[in-house]
Length: 354
Image (cartoon, rainbow, N blue to C red):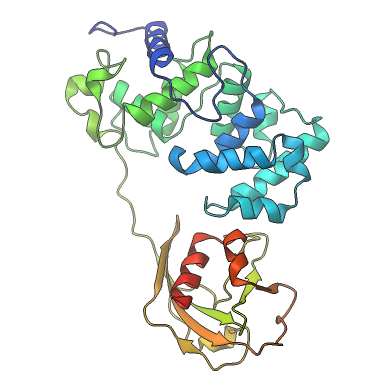
């Protein structure tokens, strides 16, 4: 523990690394102490962890690694299989970029991840944060990886009361100033662990924090009020009608969405466009002629930028009725669990068949 007085960057990093050596989390993608990290595992975990919790990612990571042990294995996989394996993790553009990035690394980098920050950042799906995390953790380079956890730690350590996102550049600068020349990869992971386990959003466990003494927010009694955030605007609401079509054998009619845009390349229950107001004549967007039976209740789902309210109408197709076009296909009810269906579509199917 540091003395209760201003501490230098070297003292702060040394105290955090000492704490990390005793309390580091055991994560399936984290290399054992003293061993060299696998850049493929670091990259895969960082992409999965974007906007997703560690608890949710653990099993997905293990399954991906068993199925595609190397980046060249992943690059050779059909995109459809990758999307199916990703289903449930959300933010599906990450899965498409994951597959695209694997292809570039396999074809243009000999199956080895580049160790230059700028080159990493140029790869699909890798932004400032992810490039910094890979450069630091996989290649032990003095880069900083600043996510929400690290922003919170910095805001509290230095008592930065400027609201987010305005404070982001300052918080990144403060974190960069603490990166040690020795063990920058461990330092990056230590910061992540500190924010995830000690300097938590709703409860700052200051008594067991290695930076408790020099923490300015603790001294001021404002730790749990930081970081400040701008008042959130309410999410807009969109409406739609989903058309759940089944056959006598239990198969469900699904449609593949366009590759670009929200839920790109995923399968969906065909529906009206999602708009600010419900469609006056929803059946004009139906995949077949009726009759249609409205299902009681509705399905709701919140995306990052809007809240969706869906009515569900059920229709039964003739046994021999073909799909309307090549974007549609019949999927047996027993095969639905293995399809690349986003959460909202699973909700709609469960509601419509329930």
